[in-house]
Image (cartoon, rainbow, N blue to C red):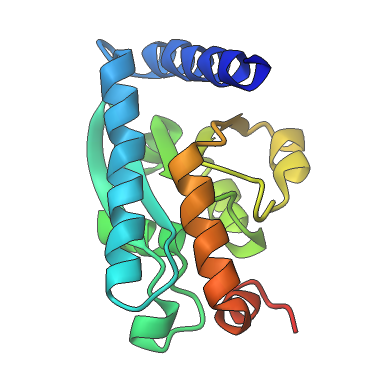
Amino acid sequence: MQRDKNIFQCRERVVSMVRNQSQGMDADAMEQFMQAAIQEARQGLSEGGIPIGSILVIDGTIVGRGHNRRIQKGSAVLHAEMDCLENAGRLGYHDYRRAILFSTLSPCDMCSGAVLLYKIPTVVIGENQTFQGPEDYLRSRGVELVILNDGECIRMMKDFIAGNPKLWNEDIGEE
């Protein structure tokens, strides 16, 4: 009961925050954005990769989508957030300042660095129970984090980690 109440309060906070950044955004739109990130995570898993997805939203419009493609592309850097930013293309300084990055998992050091580099003010995180990036550092640098701890995001990662511990540890730089 308390967990459901916390999730509801967290989602309401996201809606309020998103309304402040994007005219006309409602709770349904916010939920659709996280669902789009989850769909990216599912796509990555179906391709044989790690199920992490991300989208970039500016003024209520998805401008970039991505999923972890390290395995599929043999890449050292194609985490979901990096793939998303790459797919969004070259954006202007003011575009990033109006952006919200949605990710199904707490961003790692590398992806958090990209958030700081482009000064993306808000990151909505699907879950941080299976992995937690440098969230306190992001907050200390003025980035607003909203942690949803979405059940589907948690289940996807727990299932993947249980079935693929070696790949997971490689992805996060662990032995």
